[in-house]
Image: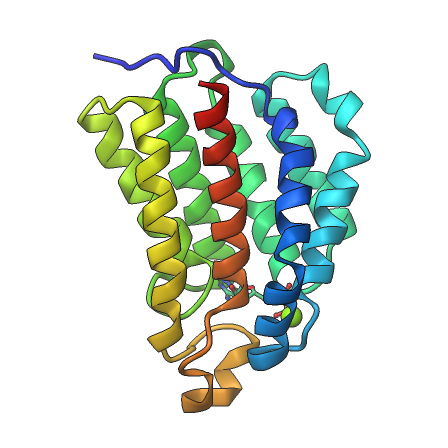
Length: 214
Ligand code: ADP
Ligand code: MG
């Protein structure tokens, strides 16, 4: 049996809240990338979300799958660094699997998981390497479990918030084996991964929006 998401929300409605949420965490995200990267992660992130915000009106008229495709293309053309192409891969792959006519949690879960797998392919990386995947992979698994257990979307959003915070935190004790922090070796231990933190902030904001909109 399929669980229909009661009211498919336009993805574009999350853009401004996301920009606000990352701006609130500017200092934290920037200092994490200064500690174990090159300090530009917040700038890359802000550039990407601001570029997406500039096409909000265009996105508003598109179905969610096409919005995801336009978001991916925009990220590809506007954000450098490692994270830009990785986030772009997520949205481009997500768009291929999201079914606007059948917006069930099962379908969302499949599209989300395919997006995360595209990051793995692009980054030649996987969970446990102190990257954004350490938040995204467990969140994808949680959504899968929720869709199997027919969990209510509000309950799922609350669980995702808790899980993503816990997972971003867990990157502190990890040894980096992908990305710029790899060269630091042991010295990166004790610091949270900036990409894991930014994914956590974005995911939590989207979940809070879903909860507050009921
Ligand atoms: P750069 O590392 O080029 O300066 P950013 O600072 O924007 O780019 O992004 C850094 C983040 O990107 C890291 O914190 C990590 O989460 C993520 N990242 C980097 N390389 C990879 C990879 N190969 N696979 C998955 N995520 C990665
Ligand atoms: Mg960086």
